[in-house]
Image (cartoon, rainbow, N blue to C red; front, side, top):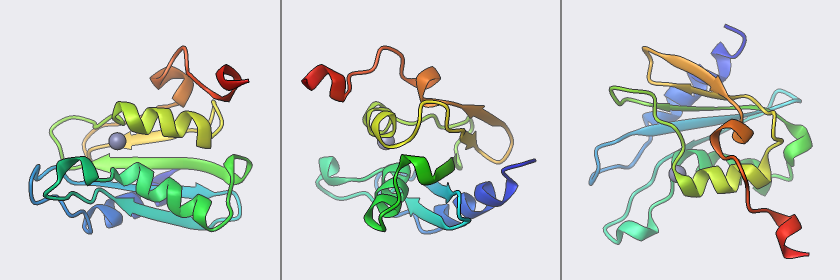
Length: 132
Ligand SMILES: [Zn+2]
């Protein structure tokens, strides 16, 4: 599979998930066009609202190092759940602004894998054009 490397790195990142409350582990990896990767995992907190999802951890990492949507080739998001874990609503909103509409989002739980785009996952987006 074309994106096997980024999937493997996302599964590697999942090992670092800190999820003592949900026991739901997520790993993510942003693949940049220059080959650099940024991994992320979900990090929970006793104050539940302070938790951060794996895919946001990864994309914020890429942006923190100066990468922008034009630099991003794909993002992989993986879980150890029984079914593929699609991004939550907050992450869909974040990804709708920080990656291109057609950037591949590879979703896997190790058994099943699907490739989606943010325009498929989040139709009728609220975005910067609404704030002009
Ligand atoms: Zn999320």
